[in-house]
Structures are given as C-alpha cells and as structure tokens.
Amino acid sequence: MVFFEIENAGLLAVSGLIWAQDAQPEAPGLGSMLPGLIAIMVFFYFLILRPQKNKEKAMQELVSNLKEKDRVVTIGGIHGVVTNVQRDREEVTIRVDESTGAKLKVGLSAIARVVTDENKSEGS
View 1 (spheres, rainbow, N blue to C red):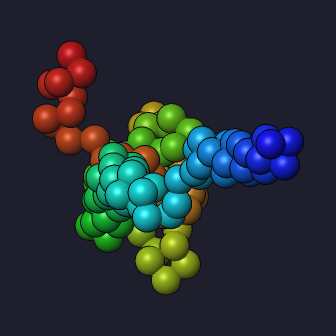
View 2: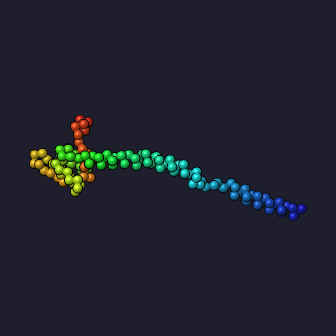
View 3: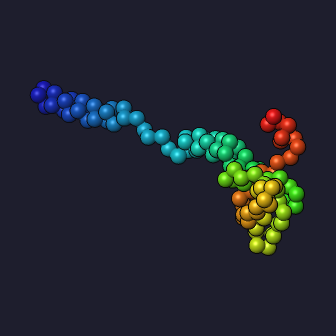
C-alpha cells in the first residue's frame, strides 16, 4: 500500500508540472501582429508621406513657373518682386524696396510662395 501511495504522489507531481506549463500564456507571434503593423504603415503613408510628396510637387511647380514681375515671399518672410531668374545657378533676384530699388539674390529654394491677387484679397 505504501508503494501505491508513493507512486500516486509522483504521478500527481508530474501531472501538476505539466498542467503548470500549459497555464503559461504564449507570446504573440509575428503572424498575429502583422495586420496591425500593415494598418499602421498604411495610415502613416496616407497621413504623412503622401501629403508631403504632394506639397513638394506643388513647390517644384511653383519654382519652375517663376518668372519676372512675380510677387514672392521668401522663407525668411521677405516680400519682393522677381527681377531675374537664373535657373542654371538656381538664383532669383528680387527687388525688396520700390523707392530705392534695393535687390537681393536668393536661392530658388528660399522662395516660400508666390503672392497673387487672390492671396491679397483673402488676407484682407
């Protein structure tokens, strides 16, 4: 009888050990996280990357269509009128003062926006 009790106690200990291993939660695998990662990347693309590319494309068009007598604002906030565009040197000469005729040479990348009559009426 003693032998039977010791054998049952051993089986109970082994079965308890197996049960304890089954109770541990499994770590999520890559397969269960993949749809969430894809959704985050798509969200990131449409929220940040795509609008930024459109903005850069519009800016490239603005710079490529720049011509004399356009009113511009630089990234530093200087307002002026374009007097000369040198695309090969990527320079623009702008007149900043009508009375003295003061001019500045700035890089094409320094042009923030072109001011039109529509922009003036919206600002007023």
